[in-house]
Length: 442
Ligand code: GCO
Image (tube, rainbow, N blue to C red; front, side, top):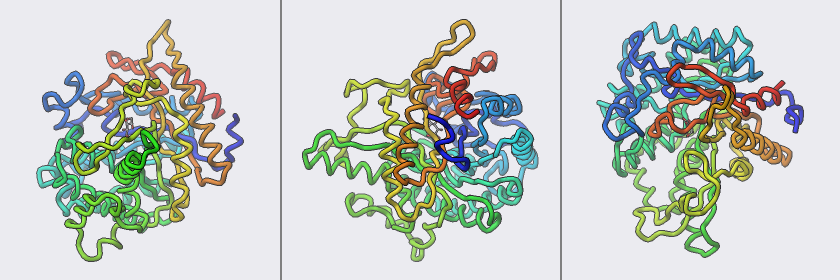
């Protein structure tokens, strides 16, 4: 397989997120985010770990961008921490926060790397959470003002923007299950958070486009290939309901199709939070859709699971190979996912904005020979090519992630990086997977 098979306009990259790498959580005027608060709560993060230092990217970004360049990676995706720019989420702007992202963007450009910012990767300013956060409809205004500040300050050097990262995860894990920040639970939090996230995505898209008409504007969604546990009708319909919740709920309103609530009657509860005119406000004609995919899920009927009557059959129980996240090792899943989203006529372009795998890497004689990750990424790229050759508009691929980092509630244990980090010394070591990607991109 050669890079040339993908064409010269194909976007190759690597993805990161502010909270997972930056550290310096209260430096230079940064306000607290919901993840600073959540990680300080007892029992919420594996081993009680926090992201106070993480990869110290706030200080080491130039060194890390040197590695991106040395690996021949032309596109660098990162996110902007809202509470560095606006410490309490709205009102007074923190110049030092703007300065940091200006330095970061300039450091990318000096190295010939294209910067791809995401406005929101899950770290809502805590002061806004105190006002109800994503459950308060005012968040659409707060987010719009923040998006406008980013567009005006950084837009002159940005060719590709992403509004949001995986809204299904921060609403589902953060507002229904309570296992991610801010730790809210239940439908009374989940439904308003979903609706306000959808409105904010579309509003953010309009603001970026109005300010930067020549930039490509996108937003990203999580997606797993879903299969029914058996071909019996109750398992097949359970798998469909899970697909509505996990894969369709957030994207379809943005594509102008409304909420997919026909097959899952409980989803009609979202309508309570809609005002006249929202159907139009929810939609935005994005230049690209970012898809992030890691594994496949198997779903079976379950009478006892509330609302959905469907449950995940854990990969552990299916006796399949597992990553360090206990997800099935299934790089082939990228192919049906691309096929699925290519069926939406509204989607002009798909970039795979995250894909990768965590494995328990070991340093031996100063090297990390992560053959499983290397094979995972190589197979994913091959499967992407197959979908592309069949006419799917898959135009880019970003590995998650550059360096091992803070994996949310899982702490530092799962390592996803192309580059190993010793969290005691901040020493970086390019793994075999990173060297393979470097040679592939040469
Ligand atoms: C995601 C996240 C990343 C995770 C990665 C691995 O968008 O899900 O963007 O932050 O680290 O997906 O779980």
